[in-house]
Image (cartoon, rainbow, N blue to C red; front, side):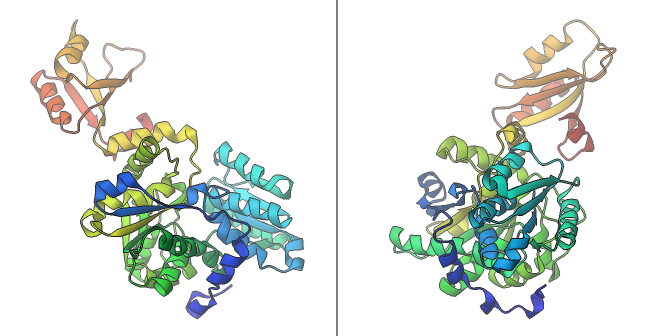
Length: 424
């Protein structure tokens, strides 16, 4: 294993990786986005890795590493552990190189992702479901690799993976010259294990050193944020796994050694804000992105003053979003925006109390989206779970005032309360 402290940045052969990948990956477009540019009064370009052949940039690192292995090593087979995009890029690379590959995935992995991995790898890939978490899966995958004398292809923490992901930066700097004479002022990069940010950040520091590189992580999985604060990678005890493409407990040692030098800022964006960006990109741009793919755009609000009048690039890292998650995405977005609220309400035991609540307490645009008695065997005595969707965040004050005015016995269920996860 290569030790981070011995790693020289000259080891990254980014131009070589670009040549190796030229006939394999899609050179994804760099597009000026009119709506975002108008909103932030600047020029916002989107690097559309959601349009990559496996709908994410992960194929770049996987293929770059595998293509440099000797024929003898490849003949023994390769292994990876992944719950999503790395598995699909790995699987496609196995088929392209004609190599036997084994993909370890957590048992709870969405069937859609399992099917996609099998589709991209066809007969060259075997999928093994093991463990409840990625960490369990990775342990099993590495043990299998040793037992069968195969080669492990990591998702981010390897120089060949990093230089493969860096080719996203090569394409950005090639294409921006054909679109504008301006240089790139800010580059927003999603961060998970750190492979993309390490690679692209390193290339930009060489070729466009004036560009500010902003790393973006989900608020619930701030592993790079705390690594930079601590001066070394740290393992987080608990993380929010919603942004599955960027939620890791610990960033890589090698990726950190690059990121600490190339990232100018590290920004955390709430999961609910990410969901709002997913919906906006779908509704306004007809762009389907996964949570990790929306993070760079979701961060722009917090940099509105700095980026005004500037040239901005946001890397849209992937579009593998399961349609089954859309209801949860909408729910998280509405809650974050202050438009969705849940209450436990104990209605007065008299005729007309529910009618009074609807006619007098609710505002003209308040909508009941859920109504459920909690105590099933005695509806007259049990509280009701009431979900309300508001047209405006400010309408909540009127709703609360009306509940007090009409002596409604209620408890608001806060999204941070444990009960929220059980009921909603």
